[in-house]
Length: 312
Ligand code: GLU
Image (cartoon, rainbow, N blue to C red; front, side, top):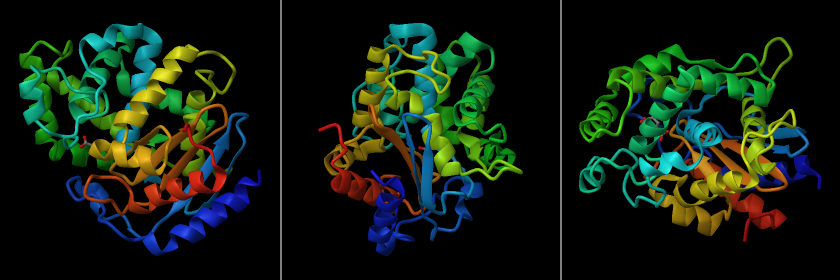
């Protein structure tokens, strides 16, 4: 398949949607991003990547990091995580407090904020440094050693993180965090702040780099260097949770339209996996009411329609 031609067709198709939606406002450092951006990249299972549009512009990873933290915890700790977090779609906003109270401090899934805080807590216990572990992993898998924390975004999230702090304290009250709340929040904000930045001086491509970093999910658990991160079954499980819970409370609609495991972030990025074939990363900062990139979802929808590459 001529990936470049397919991506160009996808980009042309979604052109009218670019700039629609609203850039995330609740993290001030993200609010100034230009909504009129669109980039998409594809990395195949052999590590070849290509892209179109603004695929070479930096963007904030945000909740896409949650798919990586889940994978890193399952790799190290197996199934034990599921005692502390569920794996059902939430049907509620990603930062909802109400559901957590009903469910006694056990988050519905690892991709709502409460669940991601538990995963970060576990990763921190397992590694001693959750956010650096993730950054190192992303650098290794993407081949881009310049990926970095964005200090401004992390500071902005910390300054406006009352809701996440409330979720963390609430779970601590139920005994569902091992580390102190400030430690968990700090590492969670750092992991969300990771910026996909071009590699200098070689010139890199953030969309492609993030697609490459997620390649282990398309390779049934094998890392870029051929070593195994996850068993085939564990990789299936991460993909399954991405499909059912990876796009906020619009996961049903995403599955309906796109038919692939995907994880979105309020920075406007989405990573989607075609098991056995490739990973895609699309970025366009205008978000719909649920928090997913308007042009990003439309692009993935058109990609699977054009190629027939979905899991269904
Ligand atoms: N850092 C963001 C938050 O915790 C991530 C949200 C997201 O991308 O879904 O609110």
